[in-house]
Structures are given as structure tokens and as C-alpha cells.
Image 1: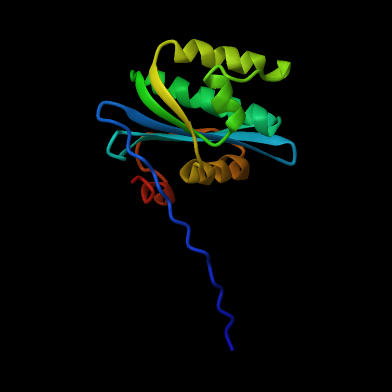
Image 2: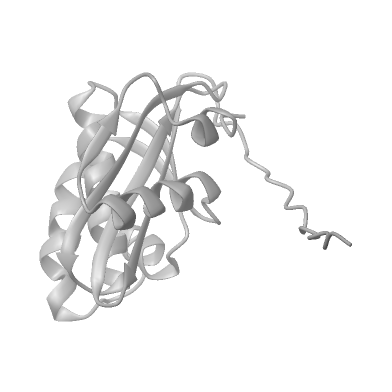
Length: 162
């Protein structure tokens, strides 16, 4: 007899940004005290522009979330874009970015760096789950390296573009 594994189906939903805007998703995580960040940048119709993962070394989940958004915005600005919808799954980062919450002192440096980047952009930030960014997290933690893709995207990421 062969055992059959049943998997739960997850419905992925993603709202397209308005024409002329890009969608940015970032996520940070910490496992065993080591932090990683990752993200994805899409055109308004869902086509991939870039994805990345970063390994930060020792750090907390909150630190990883702030750094991941910083890396995503920095990559976005370096590509010469300035109009975006930002998706993050950290309520702390979302509310701090929107200037509604105070944060612990040890995160202030990353909050200040985000503040400088957001001054150059027209944006809307939303708190929601990032399934694609979560996948990129595994890459950062597993290989403990930094990588940015502008093409030849990982197959699992390519399949989640819309």
C-alpha cells in the first residue's frame, strides 16, 4: 500500500497596482538568530522586473523586515522607478513607514534609511501576506548569500507573477 499525502490548496491573490505603478513585495525572517530578507518587483500587469534575496547574518525578525524593505526600495530606486504599491507582511514596518507607530531604538537607523528613500517616491503601502517573498526567504537562509535576478527567475517565482 502506498501512502498518499494530501496538501492544502492555497489560493494566492494579488491586486494589480494602477497603470504606471509597480508592485513591490518584501519580507524578512529570522531563523536560529540569523536574518534574511527578500523581495520582488513587478510591473503593473504582474510581469517580473527583479527579485532578490539577502543574507544579513545575526539579527531579529523585525530587523530583517526593515532591512528587506530598505533593500527592495533601494533596488527599485536604482532601477530608476519612483511610483509603487508596497506590500509587506510586517505590521510594525507598515505602520512605521506610514508614520503611525514608534519603534524600538535599535531599529531607528533602518527606519531613517527608509524615510530617506520614501521621500523620492510616490507610494502606497499595504499590510498583506507575501507568498513569493516568502519563497525567496528560503533561498537566502539556505544558501546564506546575496543574489538579485533581473531575468532567468527561479521557476517557482516565475509561476506566481500574476
